[in-house]
Image (cartoon, rainbow, N blue to C red; front, side, top):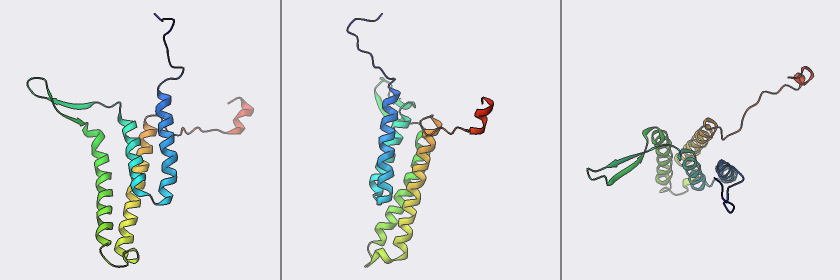
Length: 152
């Protein structure tokens, strides 16, 4: 039953998710080349949050039914933990290298920075694969213009 003053959205709420993800992707495309690695990592985390919202939470309750703990499922968290640990390790290596004078010219710092970039790039690709898995990323269509002649 629909009421006279009832408001219903014109678009499916999935559009909001698509717009948020596109906005975040646009920001990421600018942050990465600028070397703003912390911001890049933060935006990737925001994308991840928008992608896993449908997944169940593990909720533990005590005997009285009170919630004592909430966690993401193992499937959601394990891959992210792996990548985040790689990022943390590279940042720690960079921080350790900064103790030396003229650290930016030292091989240890350069290698750590390359490792940080590679880890963030892996996280970026992983997020895009999650988007693709959820049909939220670029669809690849095989199109052969010659087939138009045959009505294909």
